Length: 285
Image 1 (cartoon, one colour):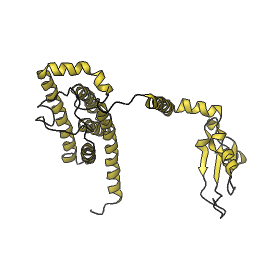
Image 2 (spheres, one colour):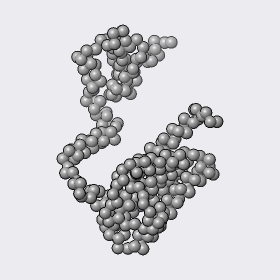
Image 3 (tube, helix red, strand yellow):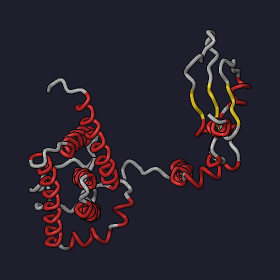
């Protein structure tokens, strides 16, 4: 091998200049202790400088001197903001909501909950309250959408032979039943019910969390996996209308809908992990 090629293999690429040192930290699991329990090692490789800390006894001063943040420079900070704007946004949001949380006035125990979604849909609640026929029509259309979700999940399982959406729905509704029974929230004030709403017949239901929303998310995620993007966007649009209606009728609190969205993603992911685990280990086959 020529010296030029050998040198190029040992020399880091210039494209890495300015990147955070965190990117080049590589744990070394060999010879990481000298027997007294204090010594361990890391190989730091960033830019053109290599620091080997194998077998070095670290005290408090040593830990501070070799801490990762001690090697951060202005370029690193700028690089984080430029290349990772989303985590930076969440950091600012964290600080903002910490200030909100520690300074807001708590809702008294004898007062109804404060729900921002209810405040934003007061006009719609008045429409549903004053127009029973319109309320029944919207409830019936919402029930049709729930039927679409159920039909899709059953079709995928019975016809296409794929079980992931069905598993996700089973996980989701089971967890919803446990949580909904564990904390039974009061029915919101100004609730506008309908016998045409699902479950049909003005029966009782769990408020936390929304199975309507979570089931629609599960169906939409599966459609995207199967490249059925037009159907997925249709489900998403109908799900948004469904959430607006549920807020307008006071059928769910805002937190029920938000957690319903998260539950759809969570249980779809868990169902996928379950499928993968069965491919690796399947004692029943």
